[in-house]
Amino acid sequence: MRILGIESSCDDTAAAVVVDGRHILSNIISSQLKEHAPFGGVVPEIAARKHVESIGEVIEKALTDAGLNYNQIDAIGVTARHGLLRSIVVGAAAGKALSLSLNVPLVGIHHIEGHIYSNILEHGDSIRFPHLCLTVSGGHTLLLLVHALDHYELLGRALDDAAGEVYDKIARYLDLGFPGGPIIDKLALEGNSTALDLPRPMLHDPGYDFSFSGLKTAVIRQIEKLQRAGTPIPLADVAASFQQAVVDVLIGRILRAATVYNLSTVTVCGGVAANRGLRSALAKLAESHSIEAFYPPLPLCTDNGAMIAGLAYHKIMSGAVSDLRLDAQANAPLGISGVIYK
Ligand code: KG4
Ligand code: ZN
Image (cartoon, rainbow, N blue to C red):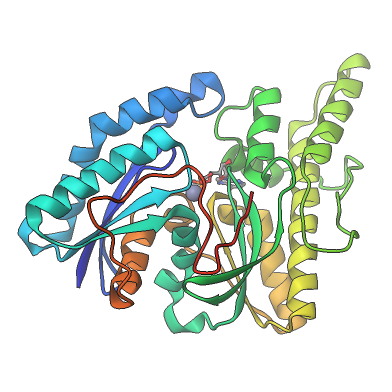
C-alpha cells in the first residue's frame, strides 16, 4: 500500500511516500528556517503562510521522487494533532482535498505518535514491545512506555521547558543562531564538558519528570559572571558543559526506567535525537547495561512526512480511518489510553 504522508505541524512543510509502513520512496522537507531565524524562534503566523505557499510543491516533489502519479497513491496520512494549530490546518486541508479528489482513505495522525513510529519505520521488528521511548524535541520531552503502536503509558515529561527549547533559548541568548540544537551540538565537540559547574536538575528525584529551565538559568548566570569579569565567553566550553548536563539527565532517566520496568529496548526520537552527545552516551549505556538502543537517521529525527505515512499504514490496517470531518488540534491525548502529556 502506497501512502502519501503530509506533515505541517510546526515550521517544516513535509511530504513523503512510504510503502506498507516501511519502505520510503521519497521524503521531502521544505525548511522555513530562513524565515524564522531573524526572530530566534518559530513565528506561527509566518509558519502557516509559508505552508500554504509550499505545500503543493512539496507534495508534487514527493510524488515525482517516488516515481508515482496521484492516481497511484492508495491513501493519505496527515498530521492532525499536536503543534501549531494554523500550521496543522494547512496540511489537514491539503490531505482532505487529495483524499476527496483521489477517492482514497484519509488518516489523521498525532505528530508525537509519528515521532515514536520513526524508529519502527527505520528499524522494523528490531523494536520490540513493550519498549521505552524518549521523545525529545523543541516542543516536548516525554518518557513513554510503548506497549503497542497505539498504546502508550506516560512515565515522565518536562515540567517546564523542553530539552530542544532550552538549546534554542541558550543559543538565542548567546546570539549563535536558530535552531540552537545543531549549533550547540557542533560547538560542544571542541569544548571541555567539565569547564562549567552546572546542575543536573531532578536527576536524583523520584519519578521520571524533567525540568530544564533551572539549567538554562544556571548557564545564563555563569555567562553573566564571566561578562562582569570581562572574560571572553568560552563558547565551546559553555556548549560542551551544557550539553553534558542535558545528556546526563536524559540518560539517567532512561537508565532508571529501563531498570525499574525491566526493558531492554530503548528508542529515542524527535529533533534532539540528532544530538551527537546523546547518541554516544546512549551507545555507552547500551553496551554497559545490555540494552538495545535505537534512534532514527537524521532526516527522520526532525519533522518529516515519512513517519506520518508509515504510521498511517498501521492505522489503516487496524481500521482507524478518518473522514472529511477530521479536525485539527494543537494538543490531544496520545493513543487509545488517552495519555495526557501536558
Ligand atoms: O522534532 P523537531 O524537528 O520539531 C519539534 O517537534 O519540536 O525538533 C526541533 C528541535 C529544536 O529545538 C532543535 O534545536 C532541536 O530539535 N535539535 C537538536 C539537534 N538538532 C535539532 N538539539 C540538540 N542537538 C541537535 N543536534
Ligand atoms: Zn516534531
